[in-house]
Every structure is written in structure tokens, then in C-alpha cells.
Image: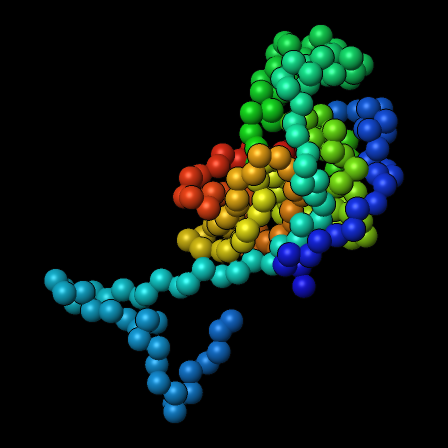
Amino acid sequence: MWKRIAWQRLSLGALSLGTLGLLGCPAGSQLSLSQSPDPTMMPVVQSEGTETAIAEQPPQPVEFAVCGEIPDWERLSLAEQTAALTQQPRYGEAITSEPLKSLFDKFWQQSVISFTTYGLSARTEPIYLSGVWTGIDAMENCYEGDRPEAINQGELAELWLIGHQVVDITWADEAYQVTVDTTTTGLQFVQFDRLETGETLPLVVIESDGGQVAVASGDW
């Protein structure tokens, strides 16, 4: 099962920092006659008319796996991040000018990044500009075997959680409801089964105290 599987961390291999630096941009059961119907699933007659409404379905659990994590990971300061990117031939001083500046702001300011596609070179900007590059070793297991193919075929989606830990994922109201705990440190890579085939991922991330967390898409 996918849910809550902690994967063993290995060395980075193909997704090493040096390699990235050289890459280019880019159900239910049938009710028998002998069974008593569940009153929560029966049509309800409205008090002010003859229209009926069907009770809402309960949230459906979604299988997920934490394929990589670093509990004590911390993001660099903005000054340290900017200096490090400036030293990279890929970015240099262009990191402070458009169009890179807006892309940098997009990934740096968000603590949840989602993906429905996978490509090694296409992961480069999200990895570097979000600051996740300092914890890159932890994501290797996320792309072993047929996982990249499953992502690109729409079978899996992926989340990067910065300063948050996944608690649960459910499908409700035509969207994935991801519940997270806020933490002072930590980096998690989470993959979960997709139950839809939309071009964009219908996703809501909610903290345990009820606050909603903004999500940046890392897809190209």
C-alpha cells in the first residue's frame, strides 16, 4: 500500500547536484433487499418544496507515500540562497532580473509545490529556486523504477512540503484535501494516487488548525 510508507534514503545518483547544474532548462457495495438502507444516503425531502437532495458522499481516502524526507532540514536565508544562485553558471546575475526573478519569487515564497509531470531537466528550476537543492539527496527514491512514468501517465501526483508534514489526503468536493501539520524544520516529498484526469491538479492544502496553505505548481 502507498499510505504512510517511509522509504529508505539512498545516494542521489542521477539527480546529483552536479548533474542538475549541467542540464538545460527546459466502492461501494450493492444494497440487498434484506438490508436496511443507510438513512444518510437516502434522498431528503426539502421542507419548502418537493425537490430532493442526495446527502453528500463522505471524503474518500487517498493512498499516499512519503518517498523522501529530512526532518531537520532548514531553508537557506534569502541572502544565502541568492548568493548561491549567483555563483551558478545557469543563473548568475540574471537571477535578479526578469524573467528569472519572478520565477525565483514563485518558488521561494511557497512552502508547498505540486507536480503532475516529471522530467529531469524540468525539475531543475523548482529544485534550485525553491532552495530544495540543499536537500536533494532525499528525493532519489521518488523517481525509482516506474514512478516517473506513473507521474507522466497521470497515475501519481507529487508534493514537496517545506516546513510541513503530511497528515492525511482525501478526495472530497472534486478536489484533493491535503491536511498538514506545520513544523519549524523539515522537508518532505510526498506522492499520491490520482483519482481524476484533469490538466491541472484540483488541490487544497489545509493546516491542522484550519488555515489554508498556498500551492505553487512546478509543472512546465
